[in-house]
Length: 256
Image 1 (spheres, rainbow, N blue to C red):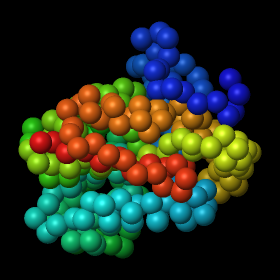
Image 2: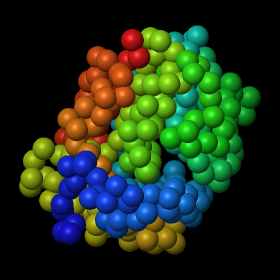
Image 3: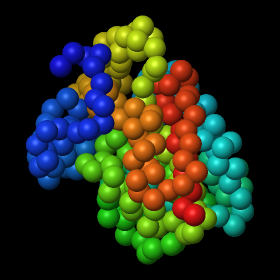
Image 4: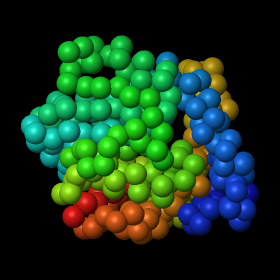
């Protein structure tokens, strides 16, 4: 497979396998492999985000909060929340309470070290996006930022999002996506495959994890395909906004 190719989101031919980057692996192995990636990069994750995106990820996350417009009574569930970037923004913008849920405990531990974590109305929970440890109709807002492409079965994660949201609740996802311009896509691919793993080696002493992260972006469904998956989970008023020419995309849906 060439480095510039993208999946149409249909998944591997064998129903018992899934993508781990450009590899097909048994479904039962993906979660462990992803856990290994994020355990490896946890201590340098925030630094690498800034370096890889030249800080633009902060603008995307702020745009997510602009569209969300948090309110004081709302309880957020931030899935694959890692070190709490989205949750801290939510609370700063006026949200009431946040729960960060991530399958990698070391990512949560890094988040707890952040100065803004002290005395914040915030909980840290280890959990799987496909089997959330929360009751039905528990949260006002569900967010997942650069995490759903790492889930073994994203449709199950979307179903879980729908389950735990209260009626009237909001789903928001920020994820890497597809640039609708072949020349720009090729330039972005050249940067991603040639530069980012080398950055990972220098900064985090781990090029393989960042090679996986680059590959995982190329295997994720495009904007329209993912929007249809959100609708299939039961959400209504589904919409999306491209960020930076489609390098990333914000998706929104409501549990009506």
